[in-house]
Amino acid sequence: MEECSETSREERIPGEVVEIYRQPDIREVVEMYIRPLPGVPSTAKAAKASAKPKGRKRLGLWIFLACVAVVVVLAVGARVLDGMSAREKHDPFEWYYDEYEMDDVPTEITIPTFPTGQGAELTVTRERGEPLTAQEIYRQVNPSVVTVLAELGSEEMASVGTGVIFTEDGYIVTNYHVVEGGSDCRIVLDSGRSYPALYVAGDEKNDLAVLKADAEGLPAAEFGDSDLLTVGDKVYAIGNPLGVELRGTLTDGIVSAINRDVWVDGRTMTLIQTNAALNSGNSGGPLINEYGQAVGINVIKMSSAYSSVEGLGFAIPSASMGRLVNDLLEYGEVQPEPVLGVMVNQIGEQLEEDLWGLEVVDVTAGAPAEKAGIRTGDFIIAANGEALYSSRDLLRVRRQYYVGDQLPLTLWRDGEIVEVVLLLEQAADDR
Image (cartoon, rainbow, N blue to C red; front, side, top):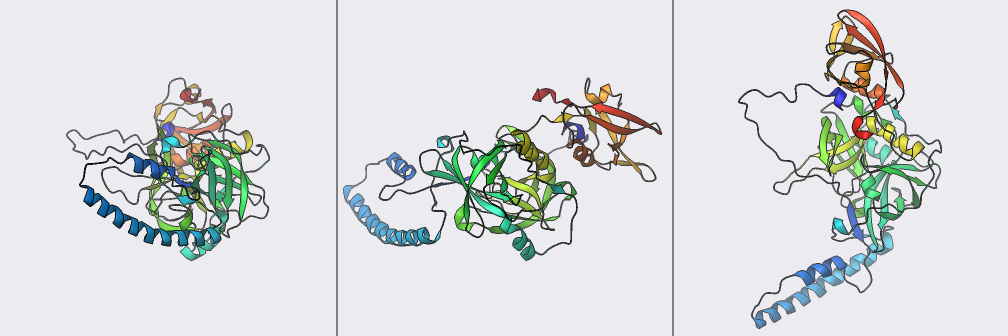
């Protein structure tokens, strides 16, 4: 956020030599499956086979290799068919992995819809209980994690992701890219029971979507405040890495970084970084703290075309996600985000005993802060009466407000207390 960034990031020591890393353009990855048709080869595989170049080789060698291939294919094919028939009897999903091209996947969501404005809400709590073991966390949270199957177009293709139940009557949050292009959708509980899912609303920019299943008494996950996370905290992920075959997989790790700005598909997302293993199919699943609370929605894993990259996963923080999801529930779209028009240091300074404040290092011309009389060098000590110790505290308060609201701030200026009120405005680039 512009008003809460660290001022020293752009400073460089003259002559300093730094390692240059050119980050590839990261894209959200969703697992794709194609329902095989009896007796018909996969179109993707058939296309690849037909596209293979034909070189001029000796006829005898080709005949020999063809014979060997036929024998191997028949032997292996028998085993594969046996395995598939057994899996079709016991696997309620009936989707099998195949290769695909992203350009072939539709983008418009045509899943039947459920109305907004029904009073549903995603609650993010700052209360925490006692730390839990990994086994306790899995038993507590896994029932709230669902497999999301979104059928894509008319090619019998589906995307497979993960979702989190956040109300007992069937509201589910997942990633937008999991259901993007979907024409129909189902969710499957850890018990194997499945429900049709309706599309409530989604936001591509923030990669969030809300679904609704017609059910009652579902196990809803508890969402904790990601602003309470610190680097090094234990975290866990539950999801469907590589699709339905490994559904309900638990991985663990730590918080590697917070408020990490990551460039994804032409937009910047501020995310939690973790080394908990995330893979295709984990998208939309929960990142869980050691208290068994979902503190984020897993969204991407960093990859590189020229080197091996491990332990670089990212999740949408619950602190910002709560407001976004509730906007989708109430209005069907994310409401414009108000700006303050100030830049402050990330960490507060102690001004007097029991008095802390965030130093203002820049004020945007014409923005609400300047109009309210805030100056560079002021310290913001409270927002709407809440004491501020870091820029995250200021952001947390601001998320409760909308464009047109009035936000009271308490300043410390040259040893004196100054009260101001900001009339919040929409960011210029969002107008």
